Amino acid sequence: MSVEEFIQAKLDRIHQSHKVIPQKTALLVVDMQHGFVDKGASLEIPKARDITPNIQSLVAAFRDAKMPVIFTEFVYADTIPCLRGNPFGPEHLAAGAGAPTGFGYPSNNCKIGLEAGKGVESAATIEALKPLDDELVVQGHTYDKFYGTHLDLALRSLDIDRFIITGVTTDCCVNSTIVSGSTRNYRVTAVSDAMATIHDHIHDACLQIWENKFARIRSTAEVLAEINV
Image 1: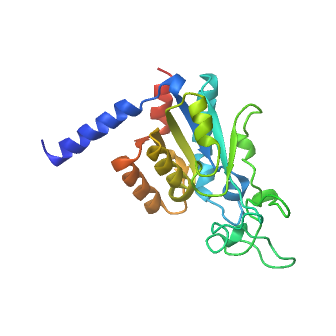
Image 2 (image 1 turned 135 degrees about the horizontal axis):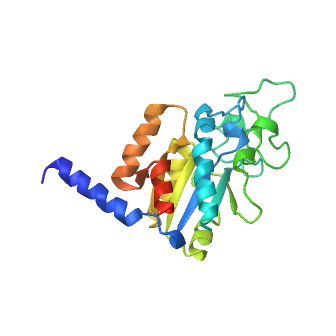
């Protein structure tokens, strides 16, 4: 067997073991918040707006099939002054009166509590993907949405052993959650055209790393086809 044949056989095994099983599969929508999606936000990911229709299609399909949809939101609070704000994300810090805001500056981005981010800096999920009243929204202070949250308990309580993941950013919160989920033995499918980051080469590198050891890679159309079988 050639190296290429070996790799393809491995990918075929992963595909079969990670396929959608309706009663065992949830959809994760990661951090599609105003502070990352809206034009003019200090941490704007322009491509997040391009992938929104694909995520909408997946959300609608999961809802129609009565399969769980779970949203995550990255949040920052002065009461938990973690490294995600200082030094790595100054945009999450409190904006000073009259001080400049925007990329690289304290802007209250996705901040909760006192001086919570408003408008384009809000931590809320965008209206186009607004969670239903009975859908779980997991707020986390780190990139890994399992760490310090009830996500794992929620999935296991629902008897979920696999999830489809979408959202932003490919290299930070999506990446950390995929690796963490795989470590917990969840069968993860990353939807390549329903996630985004700033740089395409970083997005592509993440897909290659995940496909090797952490997740199955599929397109929106391919996942929808599995749901609609």
